[in-house]
Length: 558
Ligand code: C2O
Image 1 (cartoon, helix red, strand yellow):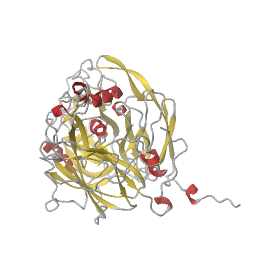
Image 2: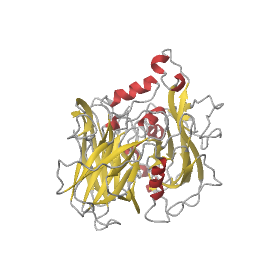
Image 3: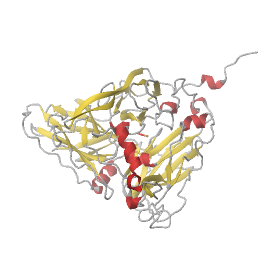
Image 4: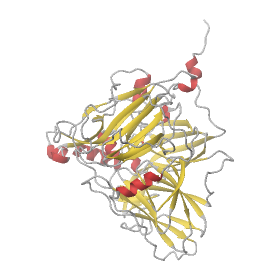
């Protein structure tokens, strides 16, 4: 008998660049004191925020994650394209089963043509609340930035901090049927700053040399809130969003939803002093309690008295939708001409909240949602239900019964999405449930309209697609109308997370050229828990670089 290795076994990873970067992530519980309260949180390597992954464009990155915590863990590399490495994407029950206590898993991927700032975070329960960090990807050696070289750079991670254990918190909120409590504090690089109890000295600070220009790598790693960020008396020039260069755009404030990243340049061109950097809430929905105290950090010139009062940073009011639109309008890709002009697959997904009828024998405890129901969320009015094993394994190994391939490409019923309810409006606000996927042939050019609904309350939802960035070719308010919608097919921003305007829509385009099982969901963890999610299965193409390799040997078992 002649032994020949089947072609499947020689399948290559996506070819990497010159270097491989190794990281060792130990997920562990760490004692921390914040807001005059000492507790255990889950961290990576005892750091909060976690370690920064530094690499260069086209590098191979290998991260060994060992779970020394008592919880199930996965890590997601948010915004990494994961060419042919869907197994390393990280969303629990989508591309892998969680890494159980005492186990480890090694993530491996290539940063194909990627540079800029992204983030990594836990992608299981609400552990992302403390398990997160930045990914910094430099251009290849000898390739300059398309903007003034900064004197120094700083990472600024916006976060939310809970005094309660976040894993228990998710369980309690889901069991209640109602909404989540607001975070106990906003944080900048883990520090709440002087507006919070016991936090006068728990504030992050950047030392500024007068006249120099700084690159700030802004990351929003929060759980359930979108945030404004501004610096007193200083303007910011956005040069990159979601790890892609943009045309320089100068603004007094920015807004980032959870999962979004932005690089901005700031020049120390004001008089010597101590200036505040502020992070505050952007809340576009009605009737939801939220944290309204700003986290404060300092932008402090050398020569300023450390004890001097800081100049306050002005933030837009929490419901300033126009401020959000102005930042959106300013985002343009640096280079033109890469947007797919022809479309093979037109999709239309509604996104929004629902209230299900109470089915609990103990409604007092379990049906604390609106109208004594339980809160839910959906895409095309289908609330996503997590499967028992990972969808990618189920798909790859043809295991039946875990999912269906019938996610509808358009809403099952068209009505006034912004002002109505899906079933016999205005009263029935329920959704269906299911683990439904939409299957795309390799290479399909996709246009997807994301339409916010007002079934419960309209809201700006940060929708994130795994495995791809997409061109945001249009957005607007109200119901999407193809007759009047205006598209930018020249230089739209290329993002991985889009804040779909409150009571409005966004149109995105991408080419399905990366085989695998790709999650798409609202990046508010509460909405994800409630089912505001869907899955694309992208089939293999023909060539070696169009085929998903076998799973790694250490892929965790459920
Ligand atoms: Cu950053 Cu599925 O998420």
